[in-house]
Image (cartoon, rainbow, N blue to C red; front, side, top):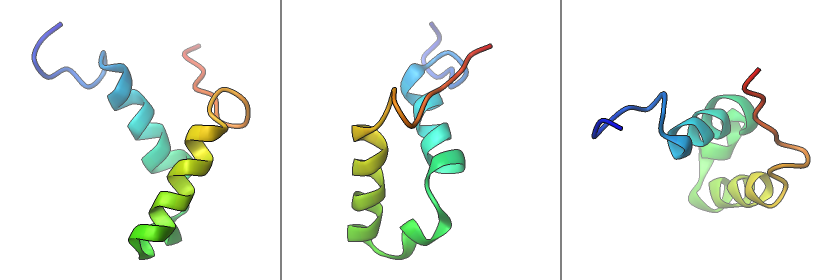
Length: 54
């Protein structure tokens, strides 16, 4: 894999979904709010939050 290839890097794919699909805009109002939303997504990844590569 090249040094930087976001389309092949799984953490980049995950972060794209978190940032643009799963977290609301108001999550960025404060650090504590962002942590709360991230915790919710990561705890429910694979259940409520799923990436479908089809």
